[in-house]
Length: 176
Image (tube, rainbow, N blue to C red; front, top):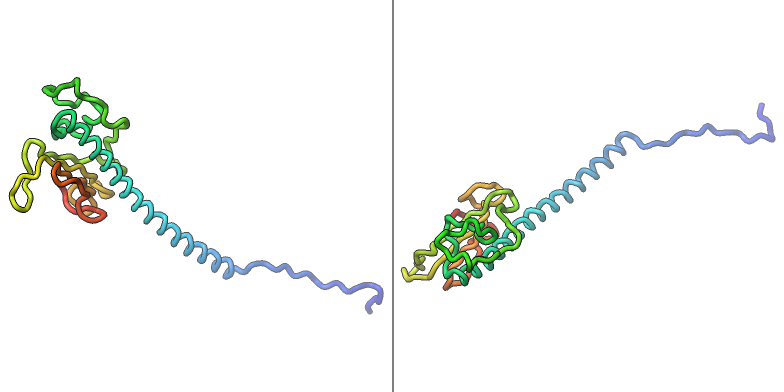
C-alpha cells in the first residue's frame, strides 16, 4: 500500500550518446578536417611558388647591378653565389668593383635544392629572326620534385634588350 504523504520516486534513467551518434560526429569532423587540410595545403604550394618567383626577381635585380659594375653577368663558374660572396669572383675581375649585391645568401630554393644558373654573357642570343638580342641569363628552381627539366621547374629568363619574364605558365616547363 502506498503512503499518501510520500511522493512516489521514479527511477532515474541515465541518458548517454549512443555509439552510432558518436561515430556520426567523428565522421563529420573528419570530413571537415579533410576539406580544410586540402585547402590549406593547396594554398601553401601556391605560396611557395609565389615566394620562389619573388626570390627570382631579387636575383634579377642583383644581377643587373652586378652587370652595371662589371659590364657582364656573372659567369657560370662564379654562379649566383658571387652576389653575396667575393670568394667566387673571377680572379681576373676588378675586385675593387665588387660589393655585396644580396645581403642574405640564398644558396637554395624553398625545397632545399641549389638554384640552377646559366648565362650566355659572352655570346649573343638570337631571336626568331636570327638577330642578336644581347646577353642573357637564366636562374631557375627545380621546383617541388627537385629534378631538373621537369614541368614544375620555375625559370627567370632575361635578355638585356627584351626585358625579363618568367618562362611559361605558373610553373614553367623544361630546363635551361
